[in-house]
Image (cartoon, chains in turn brown, yellow):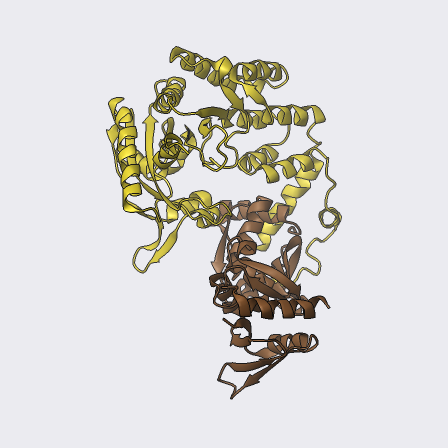
Length: 230
Length: 364
């Protein structure tokens, strides 16, 4: 079986990814029109380029449907339980950097740390009879982080987009989301907790531990490893 | 997934384990497998989502596949139970497993619960002795603990009600408990942002607009709380050391009693918990269990058995770290109050995992 490499199918992530591989002698190209997710790859023996949504790459790596995949470490660590049993990090690619942080309204001048958030959540529950809601799409990472820190009396509510706006809209009291510069947080009158950094994310080239690593796939991987290490 | 004969063997073994519990005069009960999730979410918050299977019903809202029997059995008892009552049950429970160790997601539990206000110490001993006898033929080690002692020690701290309440809320989260204790004892410095806020003439300067449901009045109230707390003297090093000594104690029940009596010289609030502890030792001895040979760890069950608030116990397979506990149990008086709409009853119980019993009985 040829080596199947899953790569984000559009946007800056795809462009940066193509650049990264090109710098290592592997050229990738998207073919056909914009709606067709087809591509070619040159410079590796027996490899197939699979263009797909970055969000689907963790699942396909875990299922072994692709041998290698490029996606954000946030998506892998949130999407896959015991993620490092399923995949191996081959290379941190140095782009797509963003921090997953917990942020609260700037008007909460009494809240700066997780300790404060926990105390505010306890008081909120006493006052309102409900748990303090934190909007996020990163349920596993946020829950594990807050459990390890011993924060209680909160509730995660799902938000798949425009999470920074949920507090002003009244659907959450706080958020946990990806930010690179903090500009969007500020524009939405939010501030990150000083000890609320959950994960430093970036684009990573992963190897599936569950894909069929037979002859041709292994040969192509060895060739790629030499390019990466060299 | 286990094959049919394995399932059948587990079921047969479970029925045999249930028999002696029924022979004690327990009423056999059953509960729904698909339960409303609201109660569990209310009790345990987000953590339950990592441990149980929760799904959504378009009409009835969030539902959970029964993660254990205790909560539905307590609910049924508080709604229409006799007083006193003894219940036994057998059925499947479901647990999400996201850890690295493969653990079954679906298995049978056999359980026994006692709701009896006449003599809690005797009820503790009754449940423990019953489980010990049921597992007597197996290479198991019993461990016991008592969350009530830690709670009494927190009540005995000479500090503000607010600090004691905050520590009590985190009894089951040792890491945050420790962080709070360190701060109240003055062992960790006040975070700079808080120090600045507390001395600022206008903490709300440049704060940005009020958004969300947490109001400015709530923020102001917490600032007042923090200002009051900043005036509070630190909890003394002796008190903190005494608390940590108690929390880390490991030995026999007999040794624990001596240690508790020593601690009570400086911490008189321990006295009720010591009386309970001593009464339990007497009740255990009356059932032929020597407290001087029974292991006691003050923090046993502190992270995993979270609705327990008194006596806790576990039976663990000797030298088999690959197996989960064979049986666990404990006292959960507070849970009956939470689920009882104002009423409560002392309650103690435990569960056995038939599949683990079978694994120990099968030669490797």
